[in-house]
Image 1 (cartoon, rainbow, N blue to C red):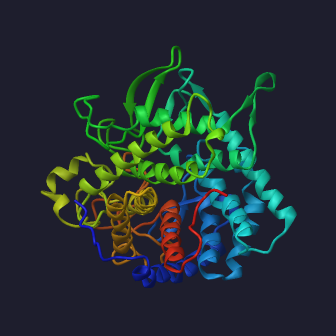
Image 2: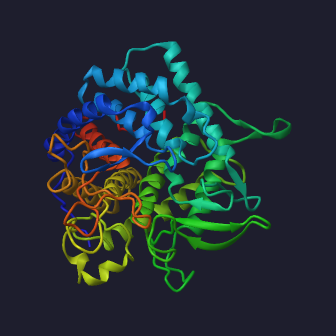
Length: 458
């Protein structure tokens, strides 16, 4: 169980967030100088050096987005130039990529952050540049929404790269693409000029994910536990019926792959922030605002409570809560996670994603006049950030290209690097882990300095 430090504030964490960006500068520069675009997207490190893994190109936006976040945090213009130039030259294929569910990862992290900086006056105003970013984001959201499976008149989902039968939990965080595109006044045009509402697709996808990928302790199966998350749900496309849980990167369909859980823990609270800014009239008649808020809150609270209850005392999880080696580790939830153990790897990237979700959920509840509950989640997120931005997770070695250590990519496939003399992966970084560590640090630093909240929407 996470031991929450109730004395923490964003201001108290400023020295740690400053250190994050001090270290990030050298690592971003080193990777930028070494990496060749024709090598593909950097994904994770091996012996401290970033490597590619041709599965899906879902991490390039994190590479360039990190430079943009670095400029936001420090004002160093070289990082704005680096991120902007790379976005313009290399990100266009990600806008029109019809084969993935990752548009929010790639395009909101780049075009979205660049548009946000323009809107906040942190980047020089330029109408043509702004129009360029807006067009990219409009199209990205529409392309993402076109990857669609309708299972009932009220439910449907953006299907994963596995095909139309597959709903991934990850995609909740990529719904940012649909949200921004909708906010910019865009819509997807279908057959016979059918006008497809992007907000409605966002809501339907979220409802479907909540109904099938999240458990609420209501006896859905004998392993039902409130807040448990399944990575993937499988549907019969002949009649739209739900068939079974599945997992691509977790240990089993009946355990929780913790990064998949973290995507939901971050995605639902930030979508709550977005939905509360919309007028009731924007919501489709069959999915009113109150219904959406209730659904999103229910998921966010269940998943957050699971995280507080079922992670080690520092809040940093092992890669899957049912990983078989955990049985050899005794009462592992009663002590901090051990990234150097001999049985199962931890996943710091999941912790960085979850920490942001906990902070956002806390602030949302405080604004909603539920201060006691809100403070609990807020302090939990700050505690998790404090633990991540310190040894042994923050990479202080200038020769290591990663920022956040002890991240795991795909344990079942054996893709993660195992150092000599070790039995499980440790000591390495991932592009999404580094990016989300920076996003978390920026969220906290902006609050501490009284700046506008870091958010994805306009």
